[in-house]
Length: 256
Image (cartoon, rainbow, N blue to C red; front, side, top):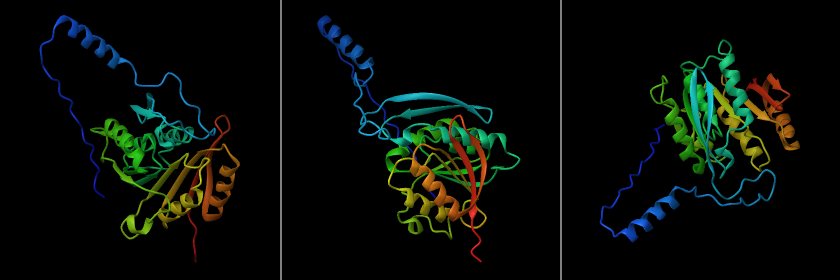
């Protein structure tokens, strides 16, 4: 898979002379530019699980795998925020390297969002492909590049993945075999749970380990967990009552 590269645009400045009044106007304009481009009040979401239609950028600092990780968040999509399931799985992977050694492993993350989990997997030595929807890939790529360049054995890959859509055409099983599949907080109140399960099945081939971490919020989360356990051979690895997060390990069922 080809690495997707980001483009950097440079803004130029125009030189010119101006009278004192113009300079004052220019100074006022410059002050205006320094103000954040955010509305004074945010429009309320239609539903508790829906994000608003404006962007607010925020930096979060995390410390995993002996590295400080800077994550840029934005509220214009679910994939722009670090969720509890990702934090829990990052800590679990760091604390249990004897059991889940990612060094030199081919790892796929579905629904990578801000990329925190993929970054930690890279820092732990994995060759990572981070996937999500097109509108999330820009911020995902930025976070991955700034936190892994010069620090990891392998440069992470970024790729588009729409759950349940043209999986065999875009990711034929004969070519795309991953030893570990990661998924964190991919289950919430949305209408793509069947497609998500199909996607997990597609990538979880014999010998693949699937690690799914999720905060339980809605009844649909429990329904998906039931379908997940019926589809795979599963083990509950960890449970965190304070954050309502559970981490499962899953492998393909023996069809013989």
